[in-house]
Image (cartoon, rainbow, N blue to C red; front, side, top):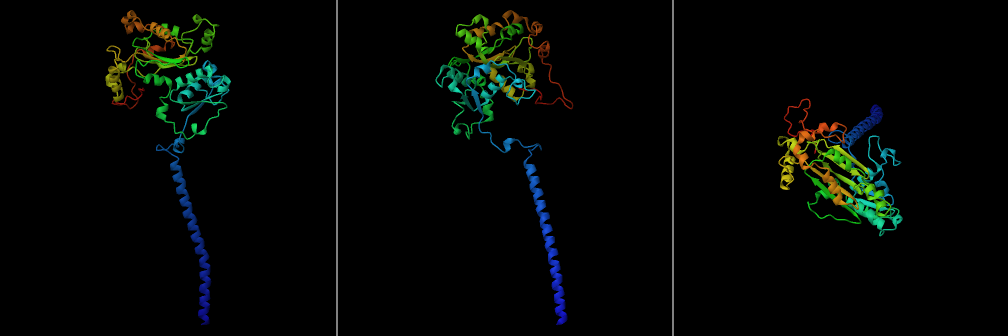
Length: 389
């Protein structure tokens, strides 16, 4: 019995020695498993932070863009519309060296893109019912007819007007600008005027003579001269008919750029005429049209805006402004187009016209020479990549 007792005691001691060892092994195993689970969770988190292409997720994966709000200083809006100060030179900050916009460009861009616009400092213009405030309201509504507009003092507005409105929609925002809305209206829609603010669309199937166009497209957004004339202190002969135009946008056809439309746009005093980079559809040729382009041609033909000789070539410009003399503006633009005699002379004569806008570079836009084939291109690219619309 004594021996057995000794054996039992020895076994008990051995078990007591083994138990801490097993306990350590279990704890070690548990730590390893927890470590593996943590690594898996981290890997999953990393995967969630990447999109399908392996790049970082954008903010839209974590948050919803609810409302685009723009605050406008009503007391200085007309001063800004006449400003030519570059963003890079302004005290606003945040502009990159590559951003060549003016402060006026930025303000108009923000107004055109907003869901909600706060016209602040209305008290400095005599209140909501003053003539000056109504003029500001008319300008803003014309630049963006879809936005909700609130007149405020010290930017005080009910929070429900700007938070959780669910107003933002990217597709709708891309067409909210007033000039786009004007183009979307059926042709021959009567023009409306509110507080002296109005718009008009100029259309022509004749190309512009570059030299004559250059002579008239000046003095955009010179509201100070317009106001001076109305107060009896200015002379209408000393100002441009475009002085009341605060925003214009469209495409034009220059005679010496036969195959390519030019982008025409102004914001305040700044006007730019630039190549779009894409040829007219008629110059592109039916063999290169995709399905959308084919439908576009059919729509133009249905509207009677497809010429048998020149196809879709033509000009279309929207002008928005204050106290516009529309008849005079249309007359000036028509006078800058080719005459019957010049039109009959044909493209070879047009090619010799002075390059009034591009310092000799317009020759690159006279004739569409086809698409440049990229390395490895077998010539069967039905999507004609590189041709943008």
